[in-house]
Image 1 (cartoon, rainbow over the protein chains, first blue to last red):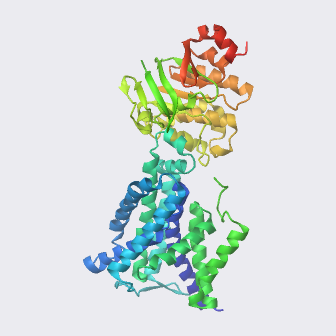
Image 2: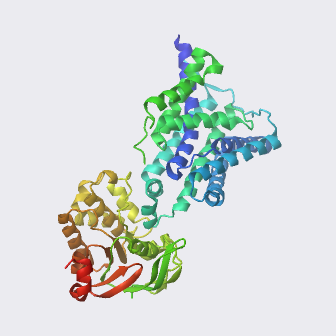
Image 3: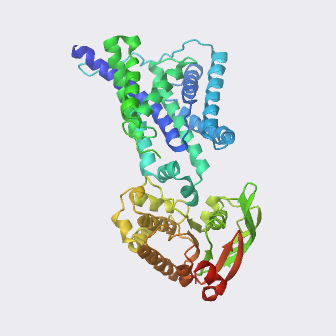
Length: 290
Length: 234
């Protein structure tokens, strides 16, 4: 195998992996703090992709410039989904939350199918086919941007969670709700914020994806499946795990595609998934059970 | 009066635990609530901290009615509870636990307060960067109290601070509570350890089955034959 094949595959894998990591970060944040398996994650990504799509086709807004619109909008959407819907329907029971998010996902997918049909839609951006020449490979500009921005957003999230008062409160609530309440931390508000941040990462992912990707009503499923694998691979609730796991899975998919052919690329992901479950069920960076 | 509780009733669902409690804590006092397991001590604390909504009665804190307040509002007002079982944040470092103590209150003097608390509890300074979950029981209790002090409480509720500590540490803990009080902090001390609590408290209430059955200055209660028989085994 020559470098001219391998290097582009690596680059391709890393850039895909960065997006996987971003989607997984949102999922792992929601799981780690609220202990919710959010089945609506993929559908919300799909809605975000349509949102960015229509901002572009309807109003002519570039997907990257849509970031400051889509991210706050989805943060607010996520916050109110948690405070307005999930909080009131869950009655504090995890299986209820599971069903609520699953139901939400079914509703969103079918509304999308009803309104927008199952057509595959793409947008045209002037830089869509531009490439950066790094000598051994050509990196498409949209993928380079996605890679850099996804890592930047991950770093921002890491700073927020690790170094700020809000982040400390989030980590406090994740493990010790009662203690947090007694320090005056509004636990329900923190839940809303986490769901909001988790949903906002999807909007960011959508803005970064769309210039080199497509949208259909089913597009979320592929991502959420990989995102769940990422979260399990990295360790449920672990930030580093989501980031490293996402990049690994991107590379595995790309390498699998290279060796087995494009359509079988994802097989590697699930082989890894099964191996991790067999030999390290808490994931690469998973802590001791709570 | 700093804290005034009138005919407080509270419970869980259909079960009434507190059956009409009335009590007061004046500024600068250590007031104790004594009682065995399951008589409603923690229910009283959690009702005062607004984790449980009372079904009857009134709670006044410095003259303000906080009966229907939310937990965060109670904390903002300066009524801080150090809960039974410490409930420190296990994944967070000692430093981060302390910082979160001033999440809602006392933020302006945060750094100075961390310094002050580390002077009172030198062990916390030694463990500053360590995850709270890795501390010993006694150290976690110190951290829980330190975290509570970070909020610059006007009234500090201590729920069984001596629970699970070695006899030597229990001595130390009670000496420390006396010392914090001597600096002017009002304390509501909820304990099973009757003998040692009566030594440092100014007044005490005895809780049985959700009612106060005795109340008075500690010296009087310590001489009460009934109390000596039931709680001190004398």
